[in-house]
Length: 124
Image (cartoon, rainbow, N blue to C red; front, side, top):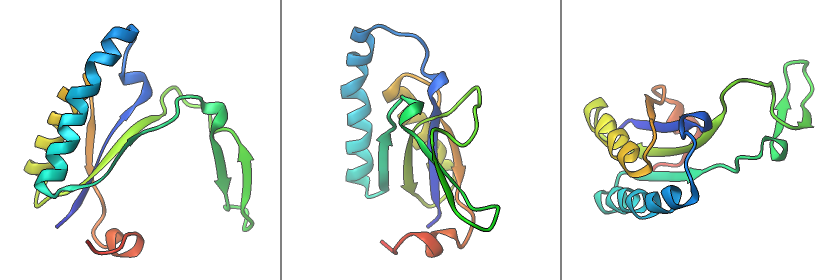
């Protein structure tokens, strides 16, 4: 089955108070439990929001250079991701919708290239 990446950029979350974020914990955990129960969850997690804690690696010069901070400054950066293993685009889109409902902010979903799963992840 193909794997899909469901993700959001941190800027899509919006400005909310602490009570609102606390109200999203159980709905988002419920979606993850549903994915586990259905056997489609590969991984789900949010990222540390502080970009100064990031590091980047660049080997385009022929030598790997690892530096503190993000690779490039952009207006948007990745906030979290979920990987699902489902039979088709329709199923992946359904789960993306469920994740969006659970979290309370937009999600994007994209299929991994054919063959990339075997190159980077063990068979499940």
